[in-house]
Image (cartoon, rainbow, N blue to C red; front, top):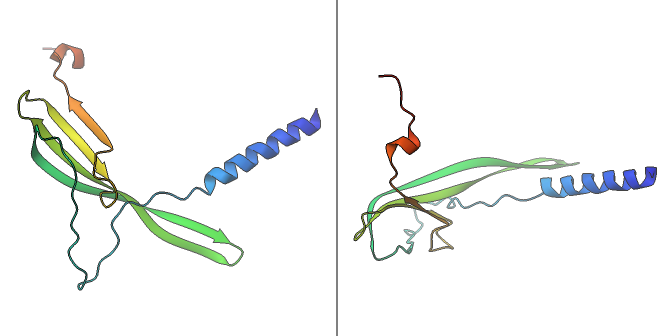
Length: 127
């Protein structure tokens, strides 16, 4: 019984240690120098959508690793291109979210905004 508890504990510690060693994905474009050529990207958007606005956001994080000879740090991050578009026939509004546009041309998420009665979202307040 005691050996099975120890085996289970060792397994849990091994799984947690393996999860902690997971390298995060970095989708932020690399630094450029003044002599680097201009980077060009193409993303895909459905024909029926009319783009109203585009924004680029990035969040950075520190990736710290250490061993017996010291600690090393790298800065990584996640970069997102957000496109707000309206369907030309239905008027439906969409938010398309792209990530890692140097490798992926299609959105990672498509959010459709659907109108609902105010009463479903807002509770009546005092007058």
